[in-house]
Image (cartoon, rainbow, N blue to C red; front, side, top):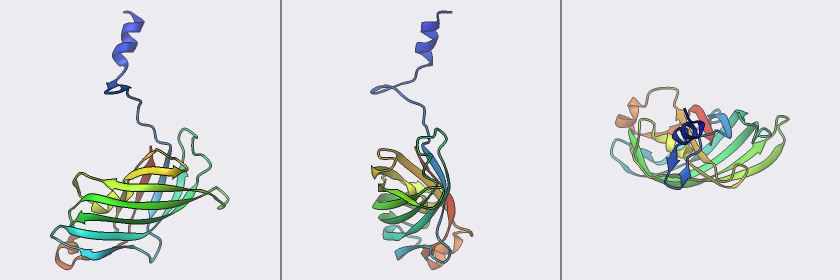
Length: 175
């Protein structure tokens, strides 16, 4: 078998040329600080409506599989966004976040600015959309951000009582 033919067949092509495999520059555990959940105004309810979310998140245990962001070990995220949201979905998410990064000794080593943006309907955990976007400045500039945050209990009460706050934890990746 011709080696050149095998290499050509194994390469995946997108609209602008070869597609690179998805690489993760940094992966971190993410959680709302103790006693400081994310806040929604007005409350998230059963029917979709425009809601503003704001709060802080702690990034810990950050690891850089390829070593491109090995200095970054933890971070503090300030996020503010709005979305058309309900207990079960979120769309048209727009906002921003600032991440202050720390090294292994806990010293600040820089910041990142992130544009929070999700256009398509997101179901299951609408708060995950707050962890979706692109780094626009600073460390990891140009990297796509994805993540998930899960509340400690079920969101079943959201439909009946509404949800004004959300504590939770999960994972956040910068790819």
